Length: 408
Image 1 (cartoon, rainbow, N blue to C red):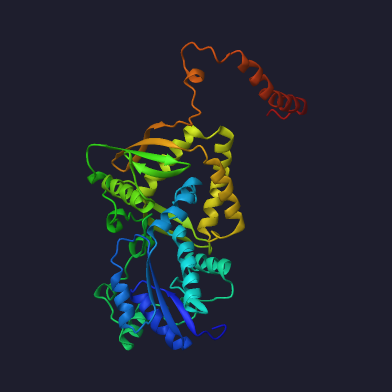
Image 2: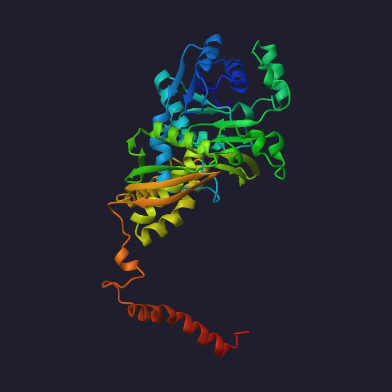
């Protein structure tokens, strides 16, 4: 404990860990605790969290529906950037943390709290993401991370503490260690148990969100996604809000086994971790967005974006959403999306999501220039000078190698 606190806003799920944290904070800090539960589309009924907090005597309870804000202000900007961490991970856990941190700070201001608390462990990325977010938004707030302070460093100790303090322990928490699951509208991630051995296959054991590609329908399904300025706005001609659109893509992707990923990644804190990710709607959306960009982005803009995307993804992964460099990158990305409008037709089949058609009123594709038939707009002789100029430096290098005897 770095300084006395009187009131703490706790990121609260109502599960065993955060229920223990709620009681522990009261004991360790002799402080009032406000609970905050975010509805990010995790697919769970959140009223039990409210009831659990009420039963624990919490006076100020926040259960907030943040689904549209999550998709509109966090997922969509990330899609516009084509952000993928280490070439595969679509950042589903990472992109949710800045919104939770933002709301924690807002609730602290609304309730007069002088601290916020989270249940992230000292081994993971989430502690960094939450705390960097709070530091960027209100550095005067204290941040409490019980997993870095208490001695309840095993499930057995957590259960013993809960029992000693009259906290209900669900039956499924008493047996074998459970998978660690994080879920929201963008994705579901699973870690732990057999997944801790990266040599063992884990899809069948943990995937709850998506159909196995082997069991997916034998006939493909087509879906058309409409874009305006880089954001998806419609499915098959029907305009939808951000959350409703992603929910629809999730349903379609899950049905066809799209978006499964088995990944060993490099955590920000230094260790490697293995997880199973399910991102059905996000996988479709990311692929479709690249499809509409292929028609509407100039080559130079597209290639620059491809250079910036890994940097953007790294910033999101490491918790720097509110940093000036992420905001600078976002401004550049968003400037590139001015003409990224049109429709993309996707084919969903047995785990794959493939672009099979795209159209845009802002298309840069010119059939006159690329046709194999006769045309009147392109003089093929121009290529000779183009190649000669590009080859000049290579010829000079080759001549130097010859003079120095370096050709061997």
